[in-house]
Amino acid sequence: MLDIEFPLLAFSHCRDVVVAVSKAGGMGVFGAAALPPERLEEELAWIDAHIDGRPYGVDLIVPNSFAGKGEAPAPAATGPQIPQSHRDFTADLLARHDIDAGDLDSAMAARQSFGDNMRADGAARLLDVAFRHPIRLIANALGVPPPLMLELGKRHHVPVAALVGTRDHALAQVRAGVDILVVAGGEAGGHCGEVATMVLVPEVAAALGAIGADTPILAAGGIVTGRQMAAAMAMGAHGAWCGSVWLTTAEAETNPVVKDKMLAASARDTVRSKSRTGKPSRQLRSPWTDAWEADGAPKALPMPLQSLVSEPALRKVDKLSEGGHEGAKALATYWVGQGVGLMNEAMSAGQVVQAFKEDWIAAAERLNGFLEE
Image (tube, rainbow, N blue to C red; front, side, top):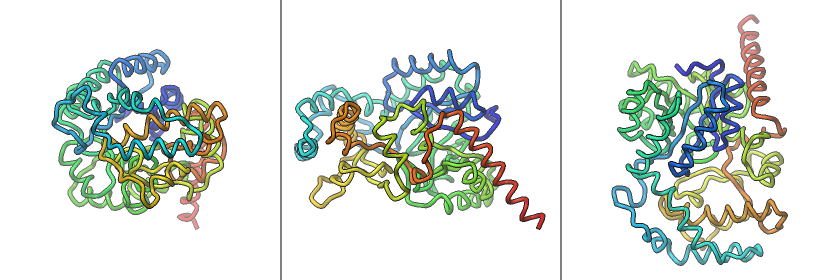
């Protein structure tokens, strides 16, 4: 379906990772949710120029529900929607780590495009850009893809994938006409549900079998090795969709301070919280995440408003931490799954793909050994 050598898909916000994985025999999928259309055009043009004709995909976030859905965005409306309590909490948290929050309000306004991209017209502009390029997959997170995405996928013969976290969501996606299911367990980095990958993958596979559906399944959630990929395929998946494992690669855009934290982290050093986007997402634990989960902290705002609170502050934290600011280094965090405990060695993206292949083969041979015994 995807014309790839090895069914390993790499979700990444970094174009270099997308290109490296596709060249190594997997498939890079570019995360474009936060980009305005003109930036997406630049990024995809760069990928086209460097990927040597290998297949790649694009991932968007068009949720079925979010604050302001169906309403026309007003240029100056987003700022006032952020309660003063959230602004004050963020400023105080930064101040306790010796970081000035004086310019956060203007940064919140600049973040407006993320919310716009989730609206029908904003998503349509991104889709228009994406389908002007030779993409081989379009993926949507947080709900059934909008009708326009499904229509454009069929028109351009591009498979449409959707992320799901429950069996019922998977069946709804199949009924809507989705071509590939990304079945993401709660171990996943970023937005995730509560059901573990070990349970969710066979549950969805069984549910599809019961209705006679042959929709391919890509397992996701905590998968950072070939043996985990092989285990998921033994449970009914057709391949794997991974995001976290690329964050510590040489090509990744990840803050070097956060990369070092990830390489030293265990599986218990992540937390699933609404505090970054307004929907549950798993991220590396830090004093930032602890503060938002503590008693007395403001309740997370609905998506996309919470991102307008968190992202400008965390971008400032990233910039300062890279310059050696100790308070910022402590606060620095990013999305990552529980598989981070197995991400102990810095490698290139191509080396990660090769390690997956070798580990997958070793796992398959081990299982075959049990049959021979």
